[in-house]
Image (tube, rainbow, N blue to C red; front, side, top):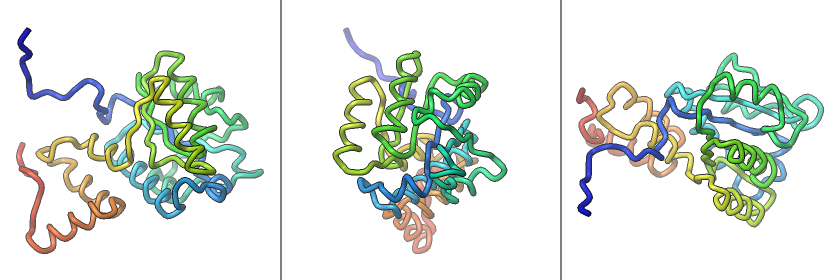
Length: 222
């Protein structure tokens, strides 16, 4: 059989409208004990994901655990991306066992769940395995998650991938939502987020634009 290629995206690629992003327990108390990733990198990656979701209008849920009594407020980087949006506070370590969160998931009604948060081995594994068991597709933004050790984070990622979750990175999430530089309506949004939070890639964009007035592809095309 001869295969025929077509210029179309694969069905596993995310779009801004096909998923719900759930940002879980990005809180001070959880971050203090996170050692698989530095606090600086974690906050930067979380900000990149939040800004990407907010900018592209992706459905997003923010949730915390024991915010007032123990874990503290959600990172400002995330709250600032969603002004006026209150995080759903829980007692359960597994977000998927919280009735208020699940009511929102069902209200939004998207078949794909994208997860990011702390800690990978508890607060991300729980909803990932639970959502998969109920037929949802699950994506995990690995570098916007963290755990008490690299071993804990890596084994948690292994466990979720073995169960069918799809790993990705924060910058990958942003660029997958854009996916074509000819999409001029979100070009400045994407490059602006990358310049602010995209590390070396962002520096490269700043350099190219400052020195040469460069742009990727045909950014002004229809």
